[in-house]
Length: 305
Image (cartoon, rainbow, N blue to C red; front, side, top):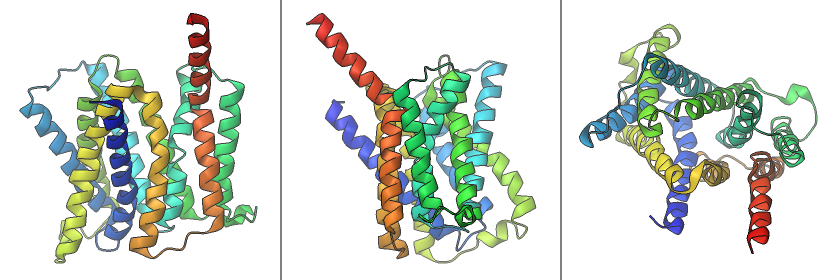
């Protein structure tokens, strides 16, 4: 696949993931949030496992690799989607999309803390700018801590648990195929979430008996296309252009969420959301080390010239 083709593929994935936040916001109006999330994600994970079985790419893992993979699934799937579903009951899809955009930046911070990645002045500046942008959004631009809603806090926890899972994925991917690991994570994490649903969504499976065809179409598109196929395409892109450049495209996800929330949820986009979004994009570009890597590559080109 050409570099341009990979870029277009990533834009398509970000479109799916951005609109998926809107889809989940719609689905929780019809289904119990935790039970819906577990069923939706299980479909995506099962699709990936069947794909690897069909391609004869199933991989044996050691006990330690299984432990790390399942733990990453509990954090990145169970924790992330549990907080996301409940959080969306208490906040807007547009706010959620903006807060979730902090994921690459938070992953970068955790990489510095746990993987001994280098902290440069540029990355520190990016971290401050990015988190400042999120504070601007959740405080509604008024600078009062009372402006932070429970929903915004839960979405932040969804982002944080996902970032922790990325660190585990990075550590495990040296010996395990990341795509196969993703399939196991989705399946294991969704099963754990399904068990949680019995304690939180007390009505049980009977509450999934929704008759509207439109709702089930959104459900299948969210689980199979956005979660299953989207994750597969994202991992393919990482193989072609590397995680550094791939992460930059994550900035497009909140943009598509903002557009989708206006078109499908009739939400109003506020000026502080736009300003906060721009701050986060700038923070991610600086804080993930992309700018540092760019200048280093330019210096190497001058030396070799």
